[in-house]
Image (cartoon, rainbow, N blue to C red):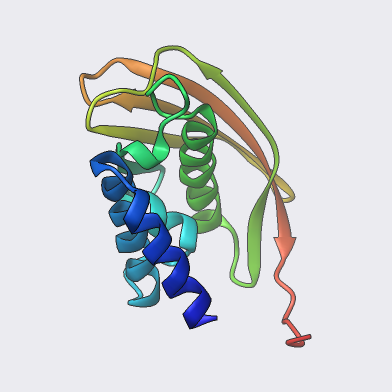
Length: 166
């Protein structure tokens, strides 16, 4: 596997321009953050989440990098949706009882402005908290303060199962 990855990296580096190299560096630094324990998930590492929690509001900020662009040179809508889902889900998971987790059952997002600038910041807050479900709302803002997206997510509260390792 290491030889295959080394060859892949060599091939990439031989053909990459400056933007390609910047995108790869961003992804590799994020993967490094994951294996060093600075991020709890690969997606959190790759997106370079910066989290700001409180009891009822959760904020997550990500730097914008060419690896996140769509073909128009703006942040891909799926990245914006991932940011909103992650912020809402993380908040939901902080509020469930010990031994339980919150998983997304529905995600609704409205894109309001292109994702441009240096960062995107998502602010999530609880709209409804029940025994079995939760509804969370989120707003995603560009660095200039303009709202880029508005989202809601529904979450099931489920018991965590111990993995058998199979």
